[in-house]
Length: 175
Image (cartoon, rainbow, N blue to C red; front, side):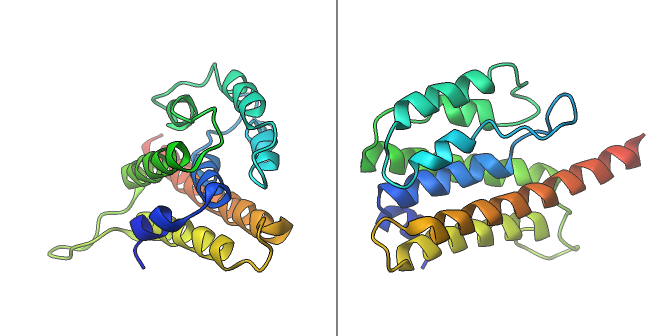
């Protein structure tokens, strides 16, 4: 099943988690070098939508000073629906998926001469997006349970580390 088909078939929990996971992977490092987790309150709402609008506003406020050229997260948060409903969340999930892939493509290695397709960074991002939606769709707990959300967060944290390592290597190579 394609990623677009998975998004089309996902429920509110899957859509919000998928979109939020894309944002998590594209978070820039904290300005002070510390561990900044501005999206964590939103993760708590992915289970059932409780306090989604309030937590979304808090995340937007936490990301207000981030340069949009350094990360697509402020733009993606700005597009997030404050309403916990399938269709607005589906549109947001699609947008976040595409913006995340575009952001990863900026730092990906070019594929070999004559080869077609995406490089390893974009391929990994596609894989993570699909795995998150698949795990949540297959969860025996109708609400997805902590295992589904925790797995999505773990995959996103892994993806963020990979992307930051690539960005860091590139910066060192230019310096």
